[in-house]
Amino acid sequence: MARRFALDPALQWDERLAYHQDIEASLRLYFSTSAPAFKARFVGKTQDEVDQELALRLEETDVRLAFVVLTSIKATFRVDFDTRCREKLKDDLSRYFRAIGKERKSAVRLDEDILEGGKDRRQ
Image 1: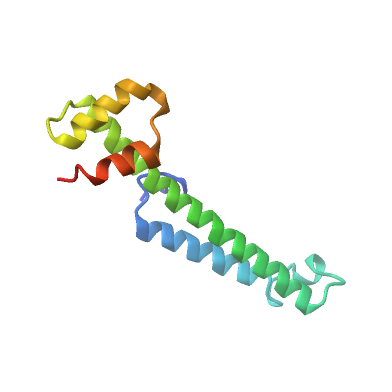
Image 2: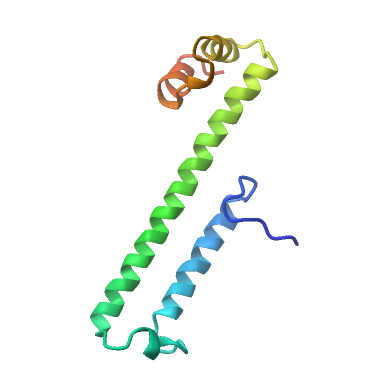
C-alpha cells in the first residue's frame, strides 16, 4: 500500500491516530535509556531534565495533532460550501451559501457565514 503524507486530507482518522501513536512511541524510545544514542544525546542532564524534555515533545505532538484535526474539520466545511455553490443545489442551505459567496467572494468566514448561517438551514 502506498503511504500518504501525514497531512493528506484523504488520510482516515484511524490512520491519523496510528501515526500519532507511532510518533509518541518513537519519542518515548528516543528518550529512554535503552536508546543507542541516549548517553551522547543527554550527557550532563539529570533524569528529571530528560523527562521534562520528553513531556514537552509529547505535548507539542498533541498540539500538532489537534491542529491537524481542526484543519481537517475546517476543510470539510469549506469543501461542502464550495460544492454547494458550484453545483447550484436547490436546498435552502445551498441557496444561502451562494448568496453569501456572491456577497463576500473570497472573504467568506467559517464561523459567521458557514457555521452560523447553516444552523437555521439544516436539512
